[in-house]
Length: 126
Image 1 (spheres, rainbow, N blue to C red):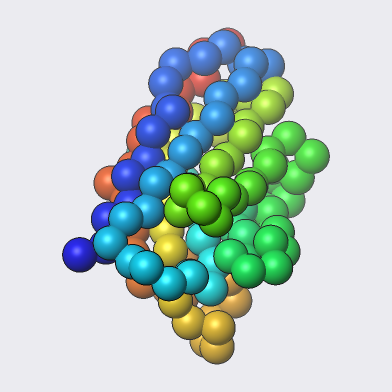
Image 2 (tube, rainbow, N blue to C red):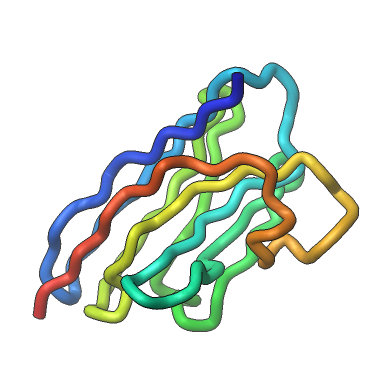
């Protein structure tokens, strides 16, 4: 059974940093890609960042470019999201997701991902 477990969320002040981790278990071969999405109360789940597992190609939402960095450790089956210069509008529940398919919707779309973690809360105070 595939499991994605996020960690690293918490409460920080605006301008500070957090690093989220997503550990994947239950699958022995490579994913096509991994992604981070976030959902604030009353809003839709939005794309944040994604990375392809083999080549390490990265994709970012415009709102986080230059501040967030996605990376992966293939040996540990773990994906990270380094978040710097956090803003109040970054506050949300952050979800990790894994995608098996190469074809289909863009990697920036939630619908293209097959497995999801339970989410980790990020709160940013001013």
